[in-house]
Image (cartoon, rainbow, N blue to C red; front, side, top):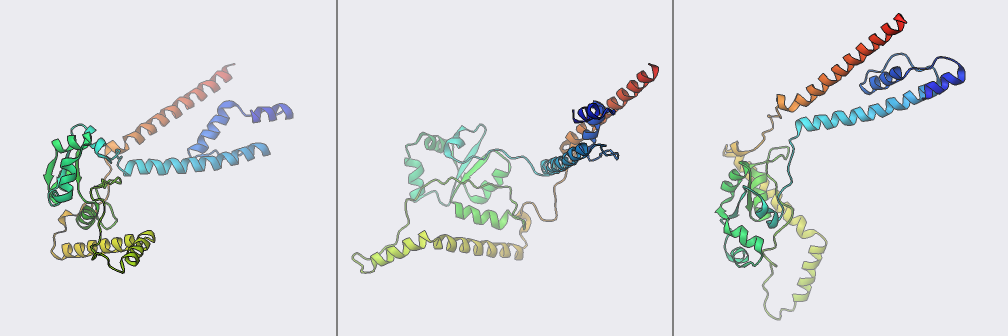
Length: 278
């Protein structure tokens, strides 16, 4: 419309619709025509269109590469209610910790989801459950710090990649871990205030994170020294192998684009021949 308006005002021939369309389409495909627009307003419009196409092409290319290289993920199971609603799904409890407070919590709980979960639950140790999870459709319930150390030590590569997912919603089994002091101890209030200050300041969380990090480092060193690193998942030297099923969408788009380009070329040739005959 800008070119048509410019042609009517100046009396010169404006650009046709097919020329403008192919001009913009070529710029979008990173193949802009060499001839710039005659008018200053047209050049300004084309310049902004080139900036727009640069952003769009960069975003599309990065999204397309990410789609080809990163596997799609499903929504993880976070709660016991979601767990029992899954079809063809299995779950287990940690054999080492299924006693005491954990046993009482799951065996005496009145929530329907917990009762249904316990009616089909299996008792496994961590290594057996982790191997079962790799087969798909399985969940293992255990203490977060305990399983985090095992996964980070044996099933995580140098880049931090692991095939396991640890849920973010905790199950409050233990209400509180306390310190046993003698009754009437004169330092009780100062001790309680100090513990609260450490918790509020994040010092306890920092100490726990440091202890977990040192434990993971020690386990990985021990694993490497004993030459038992075959359990490590996704080794560093192996990358993602793309197959035909990953890139077939790109070939379909390429074939469609070539077909549209051929049809446009045939239409332009027929249009020019029709003009010559007239």
